Length: 181
Image 1: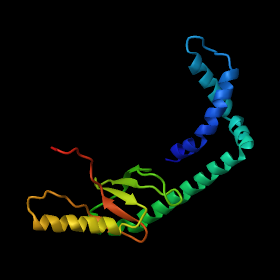
Image 2: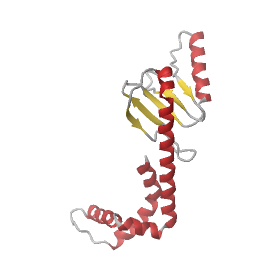
Image 3: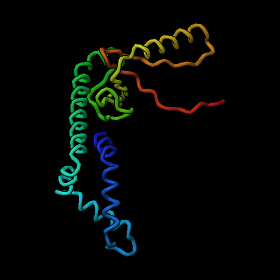
Image 4: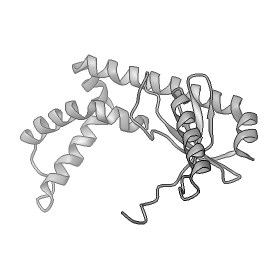
């Protein structure tokens, strides 16, 4: 997630730098000129080339540092919340066990870079961590439950939601296409 975020920030500057490099470069491999020029560009940026780029574009360097700091802080926050919530997660959703997989950056970053993160536990339980208040999600799934109790023809599945202060956990729901129109 961090690499993707930093790449998006640096892409316009790197592309401009690559275009300038390409206009002055001679292909090393005549059979694949664009690949050899690109490989030479990458070698030029690695090592001291990145420091030179940041010296030439100090605002880019600052943006990359700020995003790295925000990413680090949000990951520490997520891990702290996960650790603190395990007993409540087990009471709400069932057995957990150790975390076996994470799917970070499952949403656009909001509020200082926070994103939705999928978590899978050794038990097979999968949850979605959502770094925002979940009052609307709770109300929506309560509405689905109410509708289902009042109309047995409705096949609406509600998800279990654990709202916390400014974040929460939602039962994972695998995407499935509609069976008919």
